[in-house]
Length: 345
Image 1 (cartoon, one colour):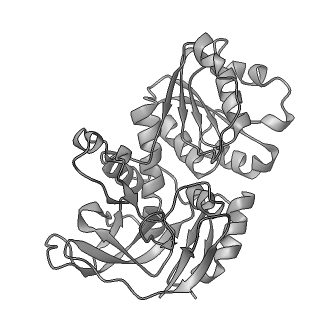
Image 2: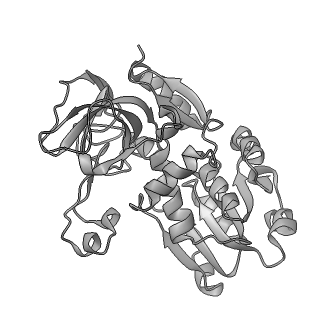
């Protein structure tokens, strides 16, 4: 089979290779991948800004059909339509695992970075990681379960967005647009910040229910531009999804005293911003790392009920062999969510 592989550490070193088809271990399954999403983390891996253990197949957002089950697997069978969480291994014994926070396990090994992932015809995962797809949910939408689960963890679990909250979101990419929809579903008011390069995405944000979208490149008085929506005190919650230092600064400037700041985007390097505002405003600052087990069933329910619009977010589809074109579009932010279709030539 063919796979998109990170072959060595350092910038680049990503190529298409022919590798053997995998087999299932005793408690594992093999999944034939229908759709796999390109994530910002995959770009960080390309630029060597995210830890990996090459050679390794990229990709951790996917859905497909079970093609083989291990000898000890009883609850699944070939033909089942599934998606999977990304943790191939966690210790199960550390403080974090025992407190139901395996996403923080120091020994965590995830597909797409330290175990072979889904940018291939087939991927192997532990059977315990599987989630059955509702009959109403198509594979392409299901491939977005993982980013939605991560966004649920950040927006609802960590940021604790509540009805009536005024929320500012920076970065109208896939995560920012999912965050927008979650905030609206939770009863919040939203302002979405982007740059001039984000104008097509900001238009999508408006269609998805943003109360205001702002091009920060052409706005001289950011605080004044959002005052009618956020009020004179500012935002209750700021959610940083862009992975840009300037965006973090903008979020901090718009938060009210006693507000909450949550970082969802990865910067890939140290960034400068006025962190003294955390003290002056007595902000609560949280990060979010991947997803929680509880966020996956919630994500699938929201997708199955069409309460989260993914069709508007899927902008491009490519075969695995067109990887370089897909990467260029993802890097240039020409689209929103880009899917790889391993079954296509």
